[in-house]
Length: 309
Image 1 (cartoon, rainbow, N blue to C red):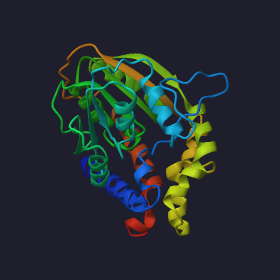
Image 2: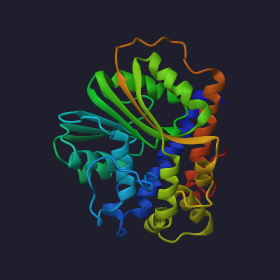
Image 3: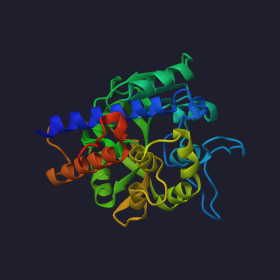
């Protein structure tokens, strides 16, 4: 099987899985309010959280706080923001609620997530598009900011995603990015983005904060998915990252780091045909994407089997 064919299969599996997750919560008491799927961020003792203050009754506070930490002190007043991998729209809803953005555009590979977003945010300054993160179906140089929160770890060709981020952004625009990555790949990713005209302005490891969120919130978030047979229950544990899951173990591993990265696009660069990532690095990316999709697949909805790693 070629790498391209394998990539297509992984992306199809990811799209199907998130469509299935939308079906799992559809019609439940949680459906209307379940806008976030990310692991969240919990401020540690003595730490001042970024962003607006959230009331005690705010649902998914840790997930919202993760976005605030990613944005940090970035001025988004009057900005057009594109989120790649928007899921059920929580981040873009929160940006419209808490920052004076002019327009939000969400792109997601899962059709049912896009339908949910369109239903919940029908306003004229919000648009949602069904599309591939490695070939984002929006124009070049249209965005003041591109946001990506905890989704790129499932992209088998992450360099194509980075190239599209650079294409979409205006010069002076911001790439606001966070995910769980193999520590060996973070430096090559930063170097790739630098070669595409994006200057790193902020980097922070937030693994401990994400671990704290999972310890406190994961079991409660799992309630949104209801009761399932043993195979599906294991997948749900992975999806919310409960203590003892393989994904939680990755957070505790020295081999992985959950990192916030912010970049400013300093120049328009015409990328070469040759890849910046080495063949070995690309193989690592594909392997990690396959593992992430495997862990998050709901067995009963995929014929009883998870994709092979």
